[in-house]
Length: 75
Image 1 (tube, rainbow, N blue to C red):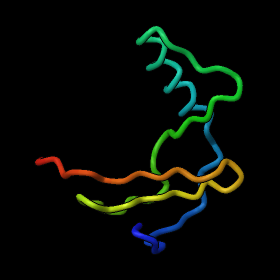
Image 2: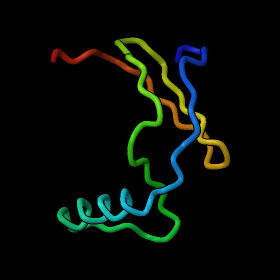
Image 3: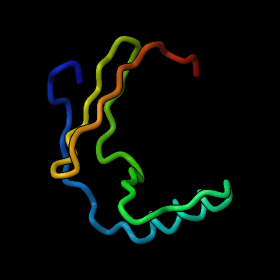
Image 4: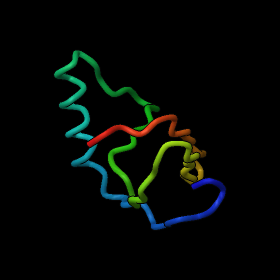
């Protein structure tokens, strides 16, 4: 976060149940998974973020994903 590693952990590789659950949610919205889709089924680590933070996740061979937090939301 903001150019510094705040947390790291290996990703769980037992994904079958998560993918089935994701497919059910998508089916309820008349959508589906297709071969080659990439699915993020949950967070590997949890780090608090706030307005102005720049967050990146390195997913190894799948690449990186980056998110800029523009504004905070009241709970």
